[in-house]
Length: 295
Length: 295
Image (tube, rainbow over all chains, first blue to last red; front, side):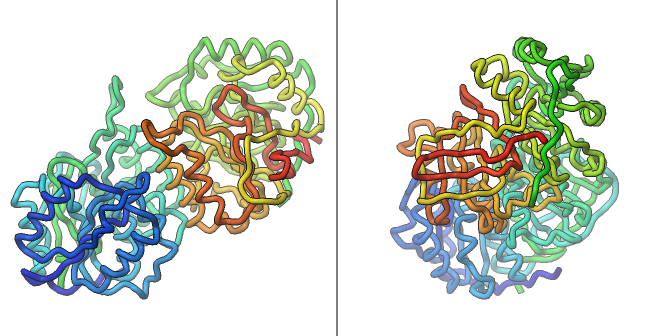
C-alpha cells in the first residue's frame, strides 16, 4: 500500500487544535499552545475544555470538532487517553482531506483512519506533551510539517534478530492498535515496519496484546518491528521486564526488530511519519526514514 | 449454531485438573481439591505447580497437560489469569472430544475453542475458587455435570431495555473474549445471549473493550446481554461506576440486558452452561437456562 504525502504547512498558517479523546490538564495545554503559537496560528473552540468522565466532552462534541478541523491544513491533538474509537463508526473515509494529523497514543486510532484513506500522518507529541519536549524535538516536528525532508534517523537501544527491513511505518500504541483488530479500521499491515509503544500496561497484558496481533494473522506479513518506549510497563517486584516478554514473542518470528527507540510516552518523543517508507537495521540499531510527510 | 451436550459424569469418576493459564496459590488449590475429591477422583501431574512469570509453566508444559486431559470425561481448570491465548495456535478443533470443561475468566478462551468444536461447556468456578464458594454452588456445579438438568434460574440486580431474548449463552470474560476478535478463535455470536463479566478493569477500559465488540460488527447479531460481576472495576474517586459506562453503551442497541447476575469474580460464581439455550427476561430480571450441559 502506498501512502500519499500531504500538503506542506506554511509558517504562520492557521492550524486546528482538537481533543478527540481524553480531557487534559490546562497548564500543560497552555504550555504546548505557547510553543505552537510561536510558529503557527492555533485555532480551537472553548468546547475543547469540556470534560465528561474520561472524555473531553461527549461524542457529538468531539466529532463535530474533528469534522470542523478537516478544513484546516494541520490538526494538532491535545491529548490521547481514550475516546477516538467511539467516533470511528461515524466517520467516512471520503470526509478526510489531505492534511497533517499530529498526535500519538489514543490518536493511533485516528492515524489508522488517515492511513486507510491513503494519507501519511505524523506520530508525534500531543499538544499537552509538546511543552515538555526539548526544543530540538519541537523544531524537528515543525520541519517535518514544512518540508518534505524525512524524519531524523533514530537510534534504538538494542535489536532482536538480524538484518534489515524496509516498508511503510505503521502502528503506534499497542493497546489502541490492537483494539482495532477485526474491525474495518484496522490498518493493513502487509509489508510494513510495525511501530509499537505503550504506557502503563503490565507485562502479561503486553503479552496478551501481542498474541492478539499474532492470532489475527497480521504479523506474518509484517517486515519488521520498531519498538518505542514501554513506559511504566514494569511489573513491581518481578525479575523480568516488559521487553523480556516482547522479545521472547518477537524472536521466534525471525524478523528484524530494533527496540528502545525514543518514541512514545517517555521524556523524548521523536516525531516519525506513519505511512512513510523507513529502513530498519539491526546492525546499526537504527530506524532510518526514507520519505517525509509532505509533498 | 447448535452446541452439543457432553456425556454425563459419574460420581467417583477420574477427572483431570489442569493449569493452562496462570500460576496459583497452593492453599486455595488444596482447598478446592478437597471439595472435588469428595465427589470425583481428581488427577493431575506435579508439573501443574510450575510457575514461570505469570504462567503456570511454559507453553509446552501447559499444552501437553491440556492434551493429556482430552482423554478424561471432565477437565477442571485450576485458575485463570492469562495464558490460554498462547496455546491456541497449537490446538486443532479435531483434537477435542466431548467432555466437560469447567472454568471461567481466562478459560473463556478455552470455552471459545470448545464452542467452535460444537460442544457446550461449563462456565463455573475454577478449582482455586471452589473452596471459597458456598456448598450449594459446588453442589449445583456437580449436579450440572451429572444430570441433564439446566442450571438454576438466576436473578440479576436490574435490567436495561425491555423484553426477552432467547439463544445459546456465549461469552464469559470481556477482556479475554475481546482478545479473540478478528482471530479464528472468536466465538460466532450470532443469535446468542452474550455473557460478560470482568475483574480489575477501569471503566474506560470496559468502554474500549465493549466498543471493540461493537466496531467488529458482532453485536448486531447478539440477541441480548447477561452481565455478571464487574469486580474491582470502580474508578477511584469517580462519581460513575463501570455499570454506568456499560449501560450507556448497551442501551442504544435496543436489546434486552439483565445486569448484576451472580456470575464471575465475586463471592458467588453460579455455574452456567455455555452453548446451552437460555432465556433472558428484563421484566423478571432473570436468566433462565433451558438446556443443561450433558446428554
